[in-house]
Length: 246
Image (tube, rainbow, N blue to C red; front, side, top):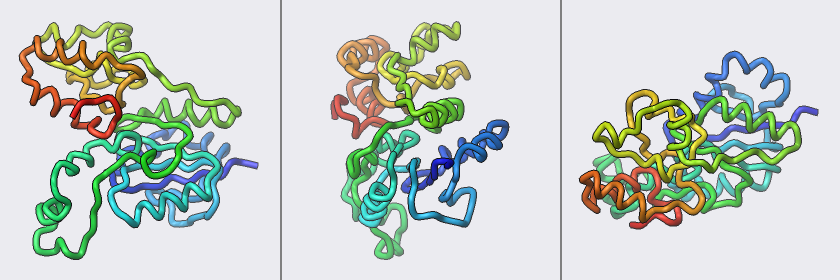
């Protein structure tokens, strides 16, 4: 039988779910191999039990805690997808402020109709089995992970820094261009898409295992960034990730 799959969204822009839908060429094979029983972005029907649950978005409401725990009970495998689900992402920037102030800033006089709690990654609420970071996820990585799961293998988790992919792609280092980058400590797997496109790495895939934060700090300081600027750069995506200074 085809494994039952659910795709769920919480606090996010749903861009990672759109990346799944962007797998146009691969979609017929995906549909043939998977029984997609829940995917609000793509269908109205909804099943109650899942072999694999992909979760997009951070947890930022009490009601989401309840929903996540229910998904965990019903799913054999739970995989957060994207920076918000894996790291807390940009949603965690609000955690530096009182929640009532956050609501007033966002909703004004209607703030009393809404609720919010400090944002957190999915793994802070329920156990997860794998994670697929990025902002958004890389659709080729999604296909690879699905194929590995279908083959009964544990998915491969990249741990080389983005710098390695920059060098493999022939990119000129952004530091040589007078720019700054988090590539030396950021988990690769994105083929250095942002740098290849002329931008810099902002760290949306989270830190590699055992990152040399001290060395990255020295590099950024030598490039002219203040400690405040460095902290802001790291906290854009990684404020909730263990090992990042506050």
